[in-house]
Image (cartoon, rainbow, N blue to C red):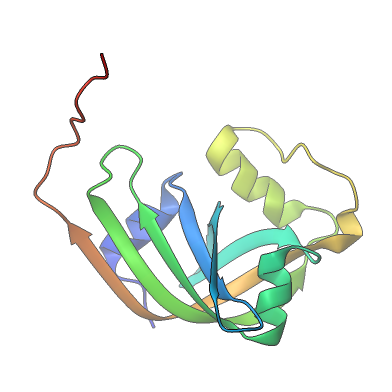
Length: 140
């Protein structure tokens, strides 16, 4: 599906997302992730041995939630599936995503042959901006 412009904006900005995958017993597992985009597909770079990579090899269904760093009440929830697993041995994709978040190439370069990019095809997307201002009370 084409990504709504509000969702695309959240994904293009250096906002953290949370990726939920399914464990073998069906229990959800969630992890904070950096995300990239390839057209309307979302990219998550990881190691082949990671829990998210192992879970999605068995069951490609995933969900993502993302909130804006500058306004945590601007958010999106996405559901989809892993439609491709791209090897990233040269860390070209990971480096691009890392530059988006840190301004630098990805520093952890061990075992590049184990790097993979999970490509997510979005099937459902919901965006909201809630009418709140983030002003938590100061701790005394």
